[in-house]
Image (cartoon, rainbow over all chains, first blue to last red; front, top):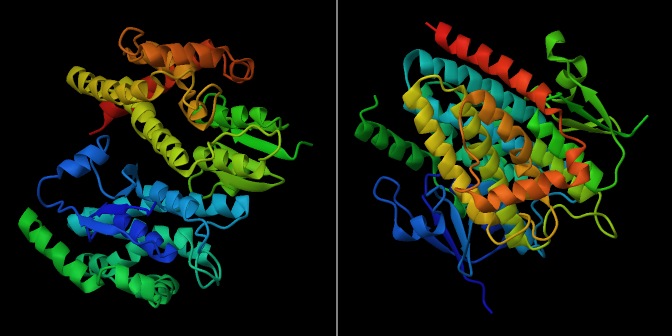
Length: 220
Length: 229
Protein backbone atom coordinates (compact mmCIF):
# COMPACT_ATOMS: atom_id res chain seq x y z
CA UNK A 1 0.00 0.00 0.00
CA UNK A 2 1.39 3.39 -0.94
CA UNK A 3 2.03 5.71 1.98
CA UNK A 4 -0.21 8.73 2.26
CA UNK A 5 1.69 11.48 3.98
CA UNK A 6 0.33 14.97 4.65
CA UNK A 7 1.95 17.75 6.63
CA UNK A 8 -0.32 20.41 8.10
CA UNK A 9 1.98 23.37 8.42
CA UNK A 10 2.38 27.13 8.08
CA UNK A 11 5.34 28.22 5.97
CA UNK A 12 7.01 30.62 8.47
CA UNK A 13 6.78 28.13 11.35
CA UNK A 14 10.13 27.04 12.82
CA UNK A 15 8.46 23.93 14.16
CA UNK A 16 6.99 23.09 10.77
CA UNK A 17 10.41 23.56 9.20
CA UNK A 18 11.77 20.74 11.35
CA UNK A 19 9.26 18.32 9.86
CA UNK A 20 9.87 19.54 6.30
CA UNK A 21 13.62 19.09 6.80
CA UNK A 22 13.17 15.56 8.18
CA UNK A 23 10.88 14.49 5.33
CA UNK A 24 13.32 15.99 2.80
CA UNK A 25 16.26 14.12 4.33
CA UNK A 26 14.34 10.86 4.09
CA UNK A 27 13.13 11.60 0.56
CA UNK A 28 9.52 11.05 1.61
CA UNK A 29 6.87 12.36 -0.76
CA UNK A 30 4.11 14.23 0.98
CA UNK A 31 1.33 16.73 0.55
CA UNK A 32 2.04 20.11 2.12
CA UNK A 33 -1.26 21.49 3.39
CA UNK A 34 -0.94 25.12 4.35
CA UNK A 35 -2.77 26.33 7.43
CA UNK A 36 -3.06 30.07 7.41
CA UNK A 37 -2.60 30.91 11.06
CA UNK A 38 -3.57 34.52 10.44
CA UNK A 39 -7.16 33.29 9.94
CA UNK A 40 -9.45 30.59 11.42
CA UNK A 41 -8.12 27.11 12.07
CA UNK A 42 -9.33 24.50 9.60
CA UNK A 43 -11.66 21.62 10.47
CA UNK A 44 -8.87 19.23 9.55
CA UNK A 45 -6.44 20.80 12.02
CA UNK A 46 -9.02 20.80 14.81
CA UNK A 47 -9.79 17.17 14.07
CA UNK A 48 -6.17 16.03 13.80
CA UNK A 49 -4.83 17.97 16.79
CA UNK A 50 -7.80 18.51 19.08
CA UNK A 51 -5.59 18.78 22.16
CA UNK A 52 -3.34 21.67 21.13
CA UNK A 53 -4.96 22.80 17.85
CA UNK A 54 -1.48 23.65 16.52
CA UNK A 55 0.67 22.95 13.53
CA UNK A 56 2.72 21.06 12.54
CA UNK A 57 0.73 17.82 12.32
CA UNK A 58 1.95 14.87 10.29
CA UNK A 59 -0.86 12.69 8.98
CA UNK A 60 0.40 9.26 7.95
CA UNK A 61 -2.21 7.02 6.37
CA UNK A 62 -4.89 8.94 8.24
CA UNK A 63 -3.10 8.79 11.61
CA UNK A 64 -2.00 12.11 13.11
CA UNK A 65 1.30 12.71 14.90
CA UNK A 66 1.69 16.04 16.72
CA UNK A 67 4.53 18.06 18.27
CA UNK A 68 7.48 18.76 15.96
CA UNK A 69 10.26 16.82 17.71
CA UNK A 70 7.96 13.85 18.22
CA UNK A 71 7.10 14.02 14.51
CA UNK A 72 10.81 14.07 13.57
CA UNK A 73 11.50 10.97 15.70
CA UNK A 74 8.46 9.28 14.18
CA UNK A 75 9.76 10.05 10.69
CA UNK A 76 13.18 8.68 11.66
CA UNK A 77 11.70 5.45 13.05
CA UNK A 78 9.17 4.90 10.28
CA UNK A 79 11.48 5.53 7.31
CA UNK A 80 14.40 3.89 9.03
CA UNK A 81 16.05 2.44 5.93
CA UNK A 82 17.52 5.75 4.81
CA UNK A 83 19.43 8.72 6.25
CA UNK A 84 19.26 8.04 10.01
CA UNK A 85 18.55 11.30 11.82
CA UNK A 86 19.41 10.23 15.37
CA UNK A 87 22.82 8.63 16.02
CA UNK A 88 22.90 4.96 17.01
CA UNK A 89 24.73 5.38 20.33
CA UNK A 90 22.31 5.81 23.29
CA UNK A 91 24.39 8.55 24.93
CA UNK A 92 24.67 10.56 21.72
CA UNK A 93 20.93 10.13 21.18
CA UNK A 94 20.32 11.45 24.69
CA UNK A 95 22.54 14.46 24.00
CA UNK A 96 20.73 15.24 20.74
CA UNK A 97 17.34 15.04 22.51
CA UNK A 98 18.59 17.09 25.47
CA UNK A 99 19.82 19.96 23.30
CA UNK A 100 16.73 19.91 21.10
CA UNK A 101 14.67 20.22 24.29
CA UNK A 102 16.96 23.04 25.50
CA UNK A 103 16.34 24.97 22.29
CA UNK A 104 12.58 24.47 22.75
CA UNK A 105 12.59 25.50 26.39
CA UNK A 106 14.96 28.44 26.23
CA UNK A 107 15.58 29.76 22.76
CA UNK A 108 12.24 29.93 20.98
CA UNK A 109 10.48 32.01 23.61
CA UNK A 110 13.32 34.49 23.63
CA UNK A 111 13.11 34.70 19.85
CA UNK A 112 9.43 35.59 20.10
CA UNK A 113 10.20 38.40 22.50
CA UNK A 114 12.87 39.63 20.11
CA UNK A 115 10.41 40.32 17.33
CA UNK A 116 7.26 41.04 19.35
CA UNK A 117 8.57 43.36 22.02
CA UNK A 118 10.61 46.54 22.15
CA UNK A 119 12.61 48.69 24.52
CA UNK A 120 13.94 47.16 27.74
CA UNK A 121 12.06 43.88 27.35
CA UNK A 122 13.52 43.37 23.89
CA UNK A 123 17.01 44.30 25.09
CA UNK A 124 16.84 41.80 27.93
CA UNK A 125 15.58 39.11 25.54
CA UNK A 126 18.37 39.92 23.08
CA UNK A 127 21.03 39.51 25.76
CA UNK A 128 19.65 36.18 26.95
CA UNK A 129 19.08 34.99 23.38
CA UNK A 130 22.73 35.58 22.49
CA UNK A 131 23.86 33.78 25.65
CA UNK A 132 21.69 30.78 24.75
CA UNK A 133 22.95 30.77 21.16
CA UNK A 134 26.52 30.67 22.48
CA UNK A 135 25.67 27.68 24.68
CA UNK A 136 24.11 25.91 21.70
CA UNK A 137 27.07 26.85 19.48
CA UNK A 138 29.49 25.26 21.94
CA UNK A 139 27.71 21.95 21.33
CA UNK A 140 28.74 22.27 17.70
CA UNK A 141 32.43 22.54 18.57
CA UNK A 142 34.54 21.95 15.45
CA UNK A 143 32.05 19.64 13.81
CA UNK A 144 30.50 20.43 10.44
CA UNK A 145 27.05 19.61 11.80
CA UNK A 146 25.58 19.05 15.25
CA UNK A 147 25.14 15.45 14.13
CA UNK A 148 28.88 15.18 13.36
CA UNK A 149 29.92 14.67 9.75
CA UNK A 150 26.32 14.41 8.67
CA UNK A 151 23.22 16.54 9.13
CA UNK A 152 21.08 14.98 11.88
CA UNK A 153 18.36 15.34 14.50
CA UNK A 154 19.81 18.29 16.37
CA UNK A 155 20.59 20.13 13.12
CA UNK A 156 16.95 19.60 12.16
CA UNK A 157 15.82 20.89 15.56
CA UNK A 158 17.76 24.13 15.09
CA UNK A 159 17.60 24.76 11.34
CA UNK A 160 14.29 26.62 11.58
CA UNK A 161 15.88 29.05 13.98
CA UNK A 162 18.54 29.71 11.35
CA UNK A 163 15.86 30.81 8.88
CA UNK A 164 14.64 33.29 11.47
CA UNK A 165 18.06 34.82 12.20
CA UNK A 166 17.61 37.58 9.64
CA UNK A 167 14.21 38.48 11.16
CA UNK A 168 15.67 38.58 14.67
CA UNK A 169 18.59 40.73 13.53
CA UNK A 170 16.29 43.17 11.76
CA UNK A 171 13.81 43.47 14.61
CA UNK A 172 16.45 43.46 17.32
CA UNK A 173 18.96 45.59 15.48
CA UNK A 174 21.98 43.38 16.08
CA UNK A 175 24.20 40.96 14.19
CA UNK A 176 24.15 37.26 14.96
CA UNK A 177 27.15 36.91 12.64
CA UNK A 178 29.13 39.19 14.96
CA UNK A 179 28.06 37.31 18.11
CA UNK A 180 28.10 33.71 16.84
CA UNK A 181 29.95 33.41 13.53
CA UNK A 182 30.35 29.63 13.87
CA UNK A 183 26.60 29.17 14.15
CA UNK A 184 25.95 31.36 11.11
CA UNK A 185 28.56 29.33 9.17
CA UNK A 186 26.79 26.14 10.24
CA UNK A 187 23.50 27.58 8.94
CA UNK A 188 25.05 28.40 5.56
CA UNK A 189 26.53 24.90 5.37
CA UNK A 190 23.10 23.37 5.99
CA UNK A 191 21.42 25.51 3.37
CA UNK A 192 23.93 24.28 0.78
CA UNK A 193 22.04 21.00 0.92
CA UNK A 194 19.69 21.06 -2.03
CA UNK A 195 16.92 19.30 -0.09
CA UNK A 196 16.86 22.05 2.52
CA UNK A 197 17.32 24.95 0.12
CA UNK A 198 14.21 23.74 -1.75
CA UNK A 199 12.17 23.11 1.39
CA UNK A 200 12.87 26.00 3.71
CA UNK A 201 11.74 29.60 3.20
CA UNK A 202 13.92 32.50 2.13
CA UNK A 203 14.96 34.42 5.29
CA UNK A 204 14.25 37.79 3.67
CA UNK A 205 10.77 36.74 2.59
CA UNK A 206 10.18 35.56 6.16
CA UNK A 207 11.35 38.86 7.57
CA UNK A 208 9.13 40.85 5.23
CA UNK A 209 6.18 38.72 6.28
CA UNK A 210 6.90 39.19 10.00
CA UNK A 211 7.23 42.95 9.55
CA UNK A 212 3.81 42.94 7.86
CA UNK A 213 2.40 40.93 10.77
CA UNK A 214 3.85 43.40 13.23
CA UNK A 215 2.17 46.26 11.40
CA UNK A 216 -1.12 44.38 11.34
CA UNK A 217 -0.81 43.68 15.07
CA UNK A 218 0.00 47.30 15.80
CA UNK A 219 3.53 46.52 17.02
CA UNK A 220 6.11 49.04 15.90
CA UNK B 1 30.75 1.85 44.08
CA UNK B 2 27.71 1.58 41.82
CA UNK B 3 28.31 2.52 38.18
CA UNK B 4 24.92 4.19 38.07
CA UNK B 5 24.13 7.17 40.23
CA UNK B 6 21.15 9.52 40.19
CA UNK B 7 21.44 13.06 41.52
CA UNK B 8 18.05 13.66 43.09
CA UNK B 9 16.16 15.80 45.53
CA UNK B 10 14.24 14.11 48.35
CA UNK B 11 10.88 15.31 47.09
CA UNK B 12 10.96 15.74 43.32
CA UNK B 13 8.42 13.72 41.39
CA UNK B 14 10.67 13.90 38.34
CA UNK B 15 13.41 11.95 40.14
CA UNK B 16 11.46 8.92 41.32
CA UNK B 17 10.49 8.00 37.76
CA UNK B 18 14.20 7.37 37.07
CA UNK B 19 14.47 4.99 40.03
CA UNK B 20 11.41 3.13 38.79
CA UNK B 21 12.94 2.73 35.33
CA UNK B 22 16.24 1.41 36.68
CA UNK B 23 14.44 -1.05 38.97
CA UNK B 24 12.31 -2.31 36.08
CA UNK B 25 15.53 -2.95 34.14
CA UNK B 26 16.99 -4.76 37.15
CA UNK B 27 19.83 -2.26 37.49
CA UNK B 28 21.66 -1.33 40.69
CA UNK B 29 22.18 2.33 41.44
CA UNK B 30 23.07 4.83 44.13
CA UNK B 31 21.26 8.02 45.02
CA UNK B 32 23.01 11.26 45.80
CA UNK B 33 20.49 13.56 47.42
CA UNK B 34 20.76 17.34 47.08
CA UNK B 35 20.52 19.32 50.28
CA UNK B 36 18.78 22.50 49.14
CA UNK B 37 19.67 24.23 52.43
CA UNK B 38 23.31 24.03 51.38
CA UNK B 39 22.61 25.28 47.85
CA UNK B 40 23.15 23.26 44.67
CA UNK B 41 26.07 20.83 44.89
CA UNK B 42 29.24 21.13 42.80
CA UNK B 43 28.38 17.78 41.28
CA UNK B 44 24.95 18.97 40.13
CA UNK B 45 26.28 22.23 38.70
CA UNK B 46 29.02 20.35 36.87
CA UNK B 47 26.68 17.60 35.64
CA UNK B 48 23.84 19.81 34.44
CA UNK B 49 25.27 23.28 33.80
CA UNK B 50 22.54 24.15 31.28
CA UNK B 51 19.59 23.80 33.67
CA UNK B 52 21.19 23.08 37.10
CA UNK B 53 18.25 20.79 37.92
CA UNK B 54 17.58 17.27 39.17
CA UNK B 55 17.35 14.50 38.16
CA UNK B 56 20.69 13.77 36.51
CA UNK B 57 21.77 10.23 35.74
CA UNK B 58 25.47 9.55 36.02
CA UNK B 59 26.44 6.48 34.03
CA UNK B 60 30.05 5.73 34.88
CA UNK B 61 30.50 9.45 35.48
CA UNK B 62 28.84 10.53 32.23
CA UNK B 63 25.86 12.84 32.86
CA UNK B 64 22.43 12.67 31.25
CA UNK B 65 19.82 15.25 32.26
CA UNK B 66 16.07 15.89 31.75
CA UNK B 67 13.89 13.09 33.13
CA UNK B 68 12.17 12.01 29.89
CA UNK B 69 15.52 12.05 28.03
CA UNK B 70 16.97 9.89 30.83
CA UNK B 71 14.08 7.41 30.60
CA UNK B 72 14.64 6.97 26.85
CA UNK B 73 18.39 6.60 27.42
CA UNK B 74 17.81 3.85 29.97
CA UNK B 75 15.37 2.11 27.63
CA UNK B 76 17.76 2.27 24.67
CA UNK B 77 20.95 1.31 26.47
CA UNK B 78 19.47 -1.66 28.34
CA UNK B 79 17.22 -3.39 25.84
CA UNK B 80 16.57 -6.73 24.25
CA UNK B 81 16.46 -10.25 25.66
CA UNK B 82 14.66 -10.39 28.99
CA UNK B 83 15.11 -6.72 29.71
CA UNK B 84 11.88 -4.88 30.49
CA UNK B 85 10.82 -2.58 27.63
CA UNK B 86 9.63 0.89 28.67
CA UNK B 87 8.49 2.25 25.31
CA UNK B 88 6.48 0.24 22.76
CA UNK B 89 8.14 -1.01 19.57
CA UNK B 90 5.76 0.44 17.00
CA UNK B 91 6.74 3.98 15.84
CA UNK B 92 3.16 5.30 15.97
CA UNK B 93 2.60 3.96 19.49
CA UNK B 94 5.95 5.42 20.54
CA UNK B 95 4.89 8.81 19.17
CA UNK B 96 1.62 8.58 21.11
CA UNK B 97 3.41 7.66 24.35
CA UNK B 98 5.84 10.58 23.91
CA UNK B 99 3.01 12.99 23.09
CA UNK B 100 0.98 12.09 26.18
CA UNK B 101 4.08 12.08 28.39
CA UNK B 102 4.87 15.63 27.29
CA UNK B 103 1.24 16.61 27.78
CA UNK B 104 1.10 15.02 31.23
CA UNK B 105 4.18 16.94 32.36
CA UNK B 106 3.40 20.28 30.71
CA UNK B 107 -0.31 20.45 31.44
CA UNK B 108 -1.08 18.13 34.36
CA UNK B 109 1.97 18.62 36.61
CA UNK B 110 2.38 22.32 36.05
CA UNK B 111 -1.37 22.87 35.75
CA UNK B 112 -1.89 21.30 39.17
CA UNK B 113 1.04 23.10 40.74
CA UNK B 114 -0.19 26.41 39.30
CA UNK B 115 -3.60 25.80 40.87
CA UNK B 116 -1.93 25.05 44.23
CA UNK B 117 0.11 28.22 44.15
CA UNK B 118 -2.74 30.51 43.10
CA UNK B 119 -3.82 32.77 45.94
CA UNK B 120 -6.53 34.85 44.29
CA UNK B 121 -9.84 32.94 44.41
CA UNK B 122 -10.81 33.61 40.81
CA UNK B 123 -7.32 32.77 39.55
CA UNK B 124 -7.41 29.55 41.57
CA UNK B 125 -10.81 28.59 40.17
CA UNK B 126 -9.63 29.14 36.61
CA UNK B 127 -6.42 27.19 37.24
CA UNK B 128 -8.36 24.25 38.68
CA UNK B 129 -10.71 24.30 35.67
CA UNK B 130 -7.73 24.15 33.31
CA UNK B 131 -6.16 21.33 35.29
CA UNK B 132 -9.44 19.38 35.21
CA UNK B 133 -9.60 19.78 31.43
CA UNK B 134 -6.09 18.38 31.15
CA UNK B 135 -6.85 15.44 33.43
CA UNK B 136 -9.94 14.68 31.33
CA UNK B 137 -7.59 13.98 28.42
CA UNK B 138 -5.59 11.54 30.54
CA UNK B 139 -8.79 9.84 31.66
CA UNK B 140 -9.68 9.19 28.02
CA UNK B 141 -6.23 7.71 27.41
CA UNK B 142 -6.50 5.19 30.26
CA UNK B 143 -10.15 4.22 29.65
CA UNK B 144 -10.47 0.50 29.01
CA UNK B 145 -6.86 -0.22 29.96
CA UNK B 146 -5.25 -1.39 33.15
CA UNK B 147 -2.13 0.67 32.57
CA UNK B 148 -1.30 3.32 29.96
CA UNK B 149 1.09 0.81 28.34
CA UNK B 150 -1.48 -2.02 28.43
CA UNK B 151 -1.34 -5.00 30.76
CA UNK B 152 1.99 -3.99 32.23
CA UNK B 153 3.39 -0.58 33.13
CA UNK B 154 5.54 1.36 30.70
CA UNK B 155 6.99 4.77 29.90
CA UNK B 156 3.77 6.76 30.15
CA UNK B 157 2.82 5.08 33.43
CA UNK B 158 6.19 6.13 34.87
CA UNK B 159 5.76 9.71 33.65
CA UNK B 160 2.19 9.90 35.01
CA UNK B 161 3.32 8.00 38.12
CA UNK B 162 3.38 11.14 40.29
CA UNK B 163 -0.41 11.14 40.30
CA UNK B 164 -1.10 8.36 42.84
CA UNK B 165 1.27 9.79 45.45
CA UNK B 166 2.22 13.41 44.84
CA UNK B 167 -1.16 14.67 43.57
CA UNK B 168 -2.91 13.95 46.87
CA UNK B 169 -0.25 15.95 48.70
CA UNK B 170 -0.65 18.88 46.30
CA UNK B 171 -4.42 18.76 46.67
CA UNK B 172 -4.26 18.73 50.45
CA UNK B 173 -1.67 21.48 50.82
CA UNK B 174 -2.86 23.54 47.85
CA UNK B 175 -6.54 23.50 48.84
CA UNK B 176 -7.76 21.99 45.56
CA UNK B 177 -9.45 18.80 44.36
CA UNK B 178 -8.48 17.28 41.02
CA UNK B 179 -8.57 13.47 41.04
CA UNK B 180 -12.18 12.81 41.86
CA UNK B 181 -13.10 9.10 41.63
CA UNK B 182 -16.50 9.93 40.19
CA UNK B 183 -15.21 12.36 37.62
CA UNK B 184 -12.16 10.31 36.60
CA UNK B 185 -13.00 6.68 37.46
CA UNK B 186 -10.47 5.06 35.10
CA UNK B 187 -7.61 7.31 36.17
CA UNK B 188 -8.54 6.75 39.80
CA UNK B 189 -8.46 2.98 39.32
CA UNK B 190 -5.17 3.15 37.41
CA UNK B 191 -3.67 5.15 40.30
CA UNK B 192 -4.70 2.48 42.82
CA UNK B 193 -3.22 -0.29 40.65
CA UNK B 194 0.00 1.59 39.96
CA UNK B 195 0.90 2.49 43.53
CA UNK B 196 0.24 -1.11 44.68
CA UNK B 197 3.18 -2.39 42.62
CA UNK B 198 5.97 -3.11 45.14
CA UNK B 199 8.88 -1.57 43.23
CA UNK B 200 6.80 1.55 42.65
CA UNK B 201 5.69 1.89 46.25
CA UNK B 202 9.13 1.34 47.76
CA UNK B 203 10.64 4.35 45.98
CA UNK B 204 8.15 7.07 46.89
CA UNK B 205 9.11 9.55 49.62
CA UNK B 206 7.10 9.34 52.87
CA UNK B 207 3.84 11.23 52.57
CA UNK B 208 4.18 13.42 55.66
CA UNK B 209 7.66 14.44 54.52
CA UNK B 210 6.17 15.56 51.20
CA UNK B 211 3.31 17.34 52.96
CA UNK B 212 5.65 19.34 55.20
CA UNK B 213 7.85 20.24 52.25
CA UNK B 214 4.86 21.28 50.16
CA UNK B 215 3.41 23.45 52.93
CA UNK B 216 6.74 25.22 53.40
CA UNK B 217 7.27 25.72 49.66
CA UNK B 218 3.74 27.03 49.02
CA UNK B 219 4.00 29.39 51.96
CA UNK B 220 7.29 30.75 50.61
CA UNK B 221 5.94 31.16 47.06
CA UNK B 222 2.74 32.81 48.22
CA UNK B 223 4.52 35.30 50.44
CA UNK B 224 6.98 36.09 47.61
CA UNK B 225 4.03 36.71 45.31
CA UNK B 226 2.33 38.97 47.85
CA UNK B 227 5.53 40.90 48.52
CA UNK B 228 6.11 41.65 44.86
CA UNK B 229 5.89 45.39 44.13
